[in-house]
Amino acid sequence: MACALSGPILGIETSCDETAVALVRQKVGGKLEVLGSKISSQIEDHRPFGGVVPEIAARQHLRWLSEMTGDLLGEVGLAKEDLGGIASTSGPGLASSLLIGLNFGKGLALALGKPWCGINHLEGHLLSPFLDGALPPEEPHLGLIISGGHTLLIEVERPGRYRRLGGTRDDAVGEAFDKVAKMLGLPYPGGPQVERWAAKGRTDRFTFPRGLARSGDFDFSFSGLKTAVRLQVEKLEQPLSDGDRADICAGFQSAVIEVLVQKTLAAAEQRGLATITVSGGVSANQTLSRVIMERAKAAGRVCWVADRRWSTDNAVMIAGAALWGGWPGGGTEWERDVDPNLRVAGQGQV
Ligand code: KG4
Ligand code: ZN
Image: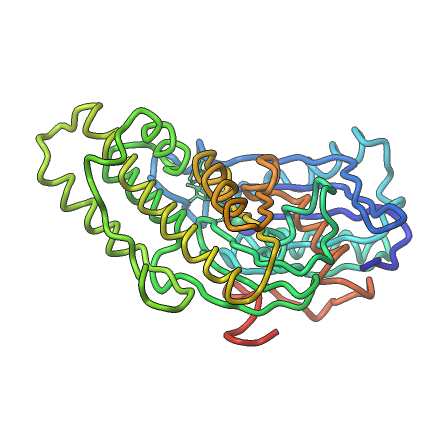
């Protein structure tokens, strides 16, 4: 879907603990060209607290956003006046963090006389597997979003037309990775740490529960798995040996992968969708992406996992969703406010 804007758009992402800006242009035919992208991670600021501290996150966004935008425009060789429009994440996320990117974007757009829009962060993730241009986003498909805050299976008719098929009933999958890492004394964010330890461990020593594997729907549950891991850790000799830690990570990761893959393939089959996409921070997990691609291929389906550059939070995906999905007319939406609980599509709604 083409968006009627006269120049590249500035995407702004501040929903959680990454400050990100990107300049993206739509080429003739709909493909996107990423002119530049910057991400400032706050991981070191939050690490001493074992998770994201909203107050610190908001202050860091405020500290960096304006400077990063100026630097990006300079590096790409564009003036503010060359922008076609500005898109900020409006939700879901931390209210105080969202407010910074949303108001900065609106303010800049107002000063420049350019259109502004608010973009759903989940729509950004959902369409991110298309950013490398291998596949047109108009392709009907099944999207699995796996991030720190969400676990969702979405049927995509085309950008902007979504149906929620299922989601987590408790913890998001990234949250489960982070909590298991914490139990094992591994630093925040836990996903990459668990993946690293799992690579050294045995998957057959501990068999953890596959939540809702036989529920007959497309919902997920990771809280039982998290509790099973905690109980198992408590039974082991403390402090944990490296071997025990690696085996726990391998057992946990394979339980997560199994249930994600099984439900995703079942949903693709039931809905008759030949293409599957996987996005969100957890899709950076190489074992998961390898297994889901292999199993999808064996089931006669094509699976696209978001490029690692665009799997964790970034602003390219926000600009991409603006150009493809959430901002088709390219008009201004001054009235749109932050919505920390924004959903991509209601239950059963397209
Ligand atoms: O998409 P994202 O950057 O932020 C949200 O929108 O939530 O996802 C962050 C989540 C964190 O929970 C992090 O631990 C997880 O993605 N993550 C991973 C990996 N890299 C990041 N989980 C498993 N394996 C990874 N390699
Ligand atoms: Zn995200």
